[in-house]
Structures are given as C-alpha cells and as structure tokens.
Image (cartoon, rainbow, N blue to C red; front, side, top):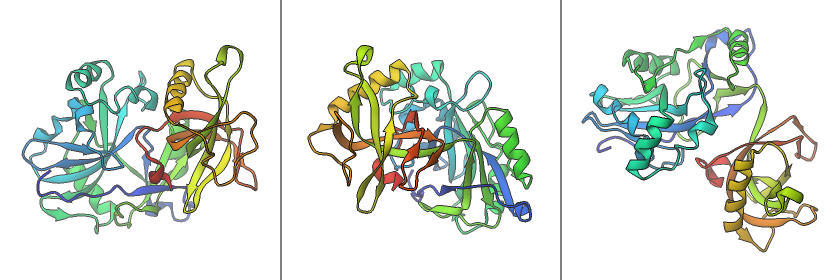
Length: 317
C-alpha cells in the first residue's frame, strides 16, 4: 500500500426515499449485506483490503488477490465483500464463515467452499489523484471506466431516479434494500452523511450487548435473551431485551462469547429491571430487527438478526 493515502469509508444514514420531485438528482444502488472494504491497489500487482475499522482483512479473502494484477494503476476503491447464496443474493450468514480468518490454508479451503465476491461502488483515488472532491456522478463514471468485472468482483450499475421502482425490485428479489446517493455529493471520509441514505425493507439497529438472561429447560446454560444498548457520548443506553431470532448454532456461539466477557457490574447507564440478569463487557456488536420504538427509545418486538464481528462499539456511536 506504499504511496496510497489511507481513506476511511463514507457511511450512509438510515432514512426514506428522496421525494419523487428530486429523485432525478439521486442514484440508487442495491444495498449489499456483507463486509465493507476499502480496496488499496498500488499498481504493482498487489491488493490490500481494509475493513471499516481499518483492519487489514486481505488474508481472509485470497480469491480477491487477483484484482491487483487486473488493474495495473494505483487506486483506492470502495466496496463490499459479500458471499452469494444460490440465487445470487448477498448472504451475511454465509460470509461469517470467511470473516476473521488469518490462516492461509484455512482461508484457501474456505474460499473454495464459500467464495467471496467484491462489489465495487466508488473510486476515491486514481493515478496519483484524490477523487474525494469530485461528485458522485464523476467518481462513478471513472469507476465504471475501469471495467472491473470478473468472477470474484464486479461493478454493478446504479440507477438514476426511479427510486420507488428500484426499492420494489429489491423487495421482490428478496434483497435488503437500496442506498440512495446524491449525484452532486462529494465523498466524505469517515462521515455518516445525509448525501447517502440507506433504505431497508425492515427496520434494523446496530446494538451493543451489555448483558443476558439464562434460558430454561433445554436452554439451560445458554442465553434466553440478550440485553442490548446503544452507545452515546455518556455511555451505554439500554434499548431492550432480545429473545428470538437465533439458530441453535448462533445461540451456542453467543454463549461462549458471553462467558469470556463476563463482569460483575452493569455496563448500562441505568440498570434495566430484569430479573436474573448477568452482565458482560460491552464489546459485542449485533444487528437486530424491530417494528418500531417506544417514546423512551426501547425497541418494539426486537429479534436477533446477526452478530457483527466486523464492527466495534466505537464504530456505531
């Protein structure tokens, strides 16, 4: 990565579709369900993949190394690493078996079993020039011009306008949703910007696990519910108890993680009145689905969606 600037990824803000009167000023991309990656290509045949937190995750995805020899120009690109299901949809649960691998042998074996695919959607540096000050439309044209489409990477088209149709298409196809990007917007490294809006078909929230309640019967020794919160400048605010949504395998995995993270004191700003609660270090991040929020900010009908090993608590403040 010699000579390339480190650039933090720009982040999207949850929201709704832009109004029909201005939608021709926006492009719409399919929202991918994977691991965000900044792609560093020095032009010498190598490639470095960095996660949203900045960690080097290149070793976990050996099948993406070939991109370095395909593009013989210095570049920094933005994209998402996904694992596709049998119908070509990104599937985070499948990708989890690939995340965090450091053994070259194991990564190579898993690459054959669950191949990764890199979806590219922005270019932020090219041929010695920073592109963050250019508009989205200009950057996107430069990215498309690179012709990066292959077995393990692609540059899907973005649709200008027609937001309702794009959203309905993703709903029908069983995809997560769309990301609306303002055509005139610059790239804002590390910023959660209103120029990028993610519209999901279900409401989701990234939460931090602060405690759990043991299950009963066949769930003895396993979590019956997780106590979750959202970070703010002063600490961790309790937002609810999540007791559904896991497979048996996920529940067992969570039990092991919770045991290692056990502490004696409640990590929430205000301890929830939950009988039998056990506390953990607030370091595990998960994504939950929910229907709405109470006036107090608690999640209504939350269900567990997935563990987010790619995120740290500081990433979701």
